[in-house]
Length: 269
Image 1 (cartoon, one colour):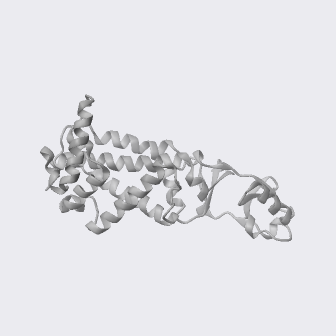
Image 2: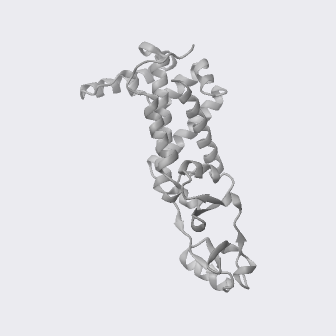
């Protein structure tokens, strides 16, 4: 069943505007920390002690006023920093204008990244920085964006609340009770406004043509995706660690899946 475009208050352009906020206006600088440095020929044991006091995992290394690499605290022993410093890998260097969303995907291959301002390396971002508010806002925004798309698509795909066929009576009753409550407050809404993310999930996954249009291979894979997405959303909403139950790699994969489904949603005008 092809989806026909309809006129309604939720326009794809508004989603694209919200997406541009994540892709263009919020950059890696919003979570970066200034990169403190030591000299190439400083005593490594002394620098390690200083890093322990300041709780630094890494420190930039300077030579002739130029930051040429960095040292990792746990690698420092006797000798001078020159014996332990690492040169920057090209994959670890990003422009200060790099979007926050793209930054997440860079961390799939790196434990840390360094920020180039002009031709100088001035800041650093580590995995710990991914717990900061801008990242949490970004991820919650992406999940909200997906929910908004699903709402729009369900309204287009299922006229006259025909999506009810994919929900059990208990969920339908919950939706109708919430609708009645909100209508009593004079809110200008329709029944589908009261669908929860679990309802949208079931509607999409149980309608095979729609599920396939969104690039979700099977119901099983779709249920696994939405389960993990709800866990992430709950962690964000309750200020828990983003990856409490998952490794960072699993979290990055989940974000990538969300992006892929969002791209398919945006094709449905």
